[in-house]
Length: 114
Image (cartoon, rainbow, N blue to C red; front, side, top):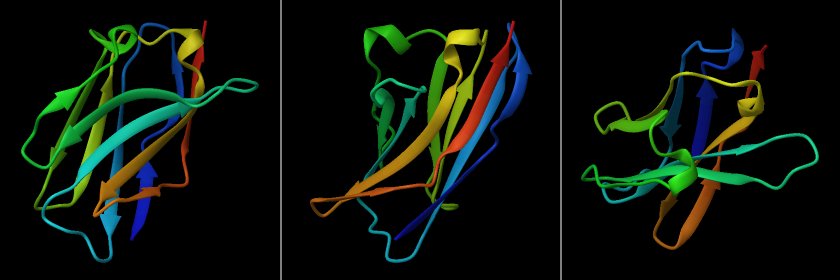
């Protein structure tokens, strides 16, 4: 299983970005996909997860500005990020969980300037 994240970049505070993460390889029809982020000197932080039937979970700290979605036909998960703040600057990682295993993408850098 391989995960390829894309869509990161430099954006001004208040702007939006949409991240994508495409999965390839032996992907089962039942799986969960998610997004995490890691800022310099900080632990990896959970943003959201979505099941293969579209059920989503967000921690309270991520509700409101972040929206996770997926396209099962494209084996792709998305993260829509709105009203971005400088503190959202981090490397954003996607993951896929299936059959008791977890796979990670390589990460995409998001930098929010003030």
